[in-house]
Length: 68
Image (tube, rainbow, N blue to C red; front, side):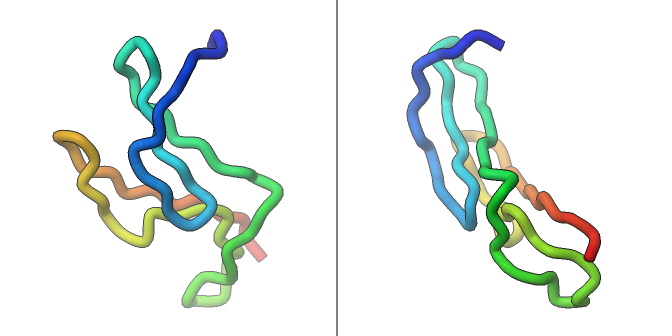
């Protein structure tokens, strides 16, 4: 994917939702960071929206994690 200018729509825990010049939406996060351990303790959260979020005219729910 070619590098494009982006505008930030929303930020959450180590997560940013961006609009690209061509109208597409991208989710960006730093995979080297961690935002803590899951409630069950079985995984380490890397990035999350903390549930569903309304973005533009749709809803996003996103979690990235590693098993502990």
